[in-house]
Length: 575
Image (cartoon, rainbow, N blue to C red; front, top):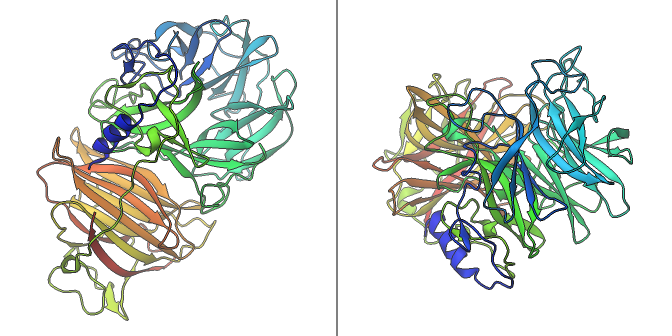
């Protein structure tokens, strides 16, 4: 069963509904993207319920339609049912910026809340005077539709980075705790995610900030309180890589709004090997770049995740390149065992789905890949020299087999873009559905910068068409990245999604493969484990129908400081 068919099966199973349906495109059903009626792109969306009968959606500054040349400064849309939306105008005019902003500043990633008897909008101001640092601006209005008026000072001023420059003061998210205290979360890859207490009127931060998520992995915070827990949703990877955008959302939780936030396996979000339980990631259908979320509860009490995504067949507003086209999607958010998952783990929907206004009862998680019958003819325990089943693209004499291991010093080479200099050790894959697994030791340490040393598995068509799953050093962090490169518009496109957390020295990696019976594409889903028993299953990349990808191993990204990848085996099993 493919990821798409799992989604269909999950949808069919979730028909125990308790309230009247909301209206939608097809009566009691709807189809993503919900912004299609008024916008081709509506990035960084957030939805609030007004003090009238309407829901309001706010998006980042962009043109709304293909062919438009003038961006809308925080476009606003309105809906009575969460799926049929009407554009109502922009929060700010073309010349309306806060007094501290540079004239070239953009306004990104709005957050809107009611505080007291007025509405408050927090928004990223990308450039400020005099030095250009970003800030969190704040504006107020008597209603969700406006008119919006900027405060004279930012809620969060620009923050100098210790090594020079300015931390990215992006992506505000506001939370009010049961005692009435207001908090603001903010930050991005350069600097991490922080939280500060807000003044009672919500217009400025006070006191000392607390970092809650590590830099170089997370941005786009959104925090909710549920059953005594605070859940920090955050996005990872590149938001805007066109057809290979791997942006995705993961979550951690804490008993305090100040953290520490940990994932389902107890791994902190605020360390070099940061955790994060997947909420939504690319699943092999049309949608990639599934990230930067908000959360809205419908009138029946059902939670929904609002986020943007990219249609991989139409990734830009003006093809072949330009602004990434990121429409607004809405999907049911399930809570399973205390953890949130979009569509019970099936993730983004592309088919007609039950509309908001009905509350879904308890659901079971979508099944994840499980290894079955072993396929020893395709496997290698590295108990002897590499046999004829292996093929080495750009052979590396430093890769040797002894003592039941393949030892391969990490190369100062790569495969992305025009580099195509790294070795790739390949063998044929079985037909049908299977799982490939390896156990790898790679001593990358923690916290130090050793970009972008990595080792792992690869599904390989050629140097410009592959899916690579590797444990990797990304600045001060250690992550497991599942990246894809593909030909696009006369060049190549590369992007990655973060699949999980590597072990301190040893990490288990899996690629689960199926052929989509609808279009013939090869689907590969990434699995990661720190102990070989508990697995986190991340996103899906596809390779084209009609190709015959081979499976293999890689060790590249930087030769200094020297480190050797040690592979214990490559095993195949049926799925």
